[in-house]
Image (cartoon, rainbow, N blue to C red; front, side, top):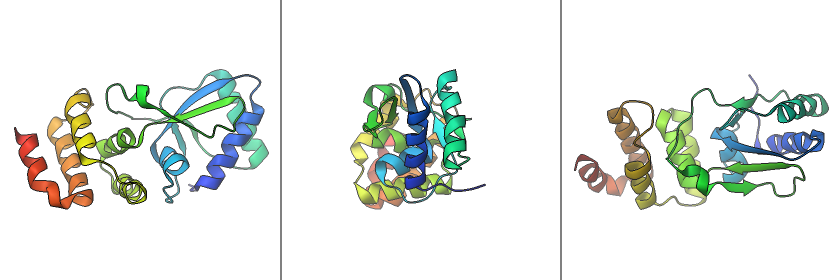
Length: 183
């Protein structure tokens, strides 16, 4: 399976925009959001979306594949979960597009979304986001406690994934975070 860097993702989305007959909205999550908005250099294999695509957008994606020669998988993520209410904090990207309105999760929300699975490449992407523009531990912790209660999966695993993330990004605060999550 091919990997697609930011420049190819943007070129593809421009072709989708050009192929649309009318306005369309999409929320992009995962590695594509990390690359497009937050400058993560690790290429992604697809463009995951938060919701299913309307028919008009699906048709434009097919056209963009033909136009660009990029066979980028584009559609709803098989499994995705995030902070309750994250949609109220979405960030618009690529405002130069005329018909396609692309939004991505705010950086702390995206970090928590990727932390849920806890895969190494997800943690690397979060680490890269943090290096480019520091994430705030207090924001992550607050959203974990107040907005991640309905995440699918065992709470112990979620807490373990979060602690693994804290150990990578904020090792000096491990003791404080562990104590807070126990209480």
